Length: 248
Image 1: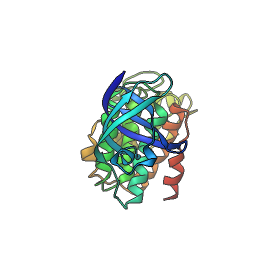
Image 2: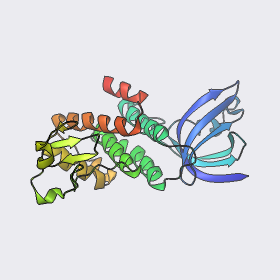
Image 3: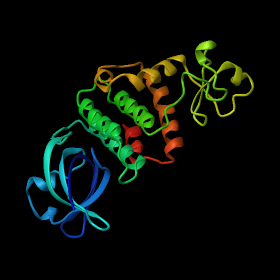
């Protein structure tokens, strides 16, 4: 059976003497792992279409254990000719997150569109780290782990009915009100009110707008620290590209 869909290459590895196995996040079928036979023996665009962060149209042949990539058409090669190593690193990190947080065949059009958008806006972003962190919170939300900011994550009371405390619980998934904090702040971390307002904005503001934003370094570090803790806790994964980003 043949099937055709748009997709973004998350990673590809060499296999055997001439083949490649690519992991592609597709618009219609979620994550697909497929083999391209003989692709390393040719200098055609077929080989370049399987480079990481390439957005294209892929024709697959359904296999028993592994699908086969029959044809490709490149629509856009994100960062293919870019010398901006830092922006490429943030883009690769986004691809790794999608790869590790999804299972093969899980359809999520929202996540596909988000990945395509972040790769586009990272290229011109004033602060690529902020765009990357925004992507992470949006991805977390799309995958069902959106933090609670309207209600206390412990007693479920509306935070608008009382003064918002400056405590956030990764384990409980959101802010903790003053009343619950007074009973014990175990598993809570102190956060600035700026952080709370910032994440609320990042969850709803389009990446096209966020790509023009910059925030103070102190606030960016706070956001980065809590984003990493939250993503690691709910994904139960570690991300190889995070280590490189920390070294930048």
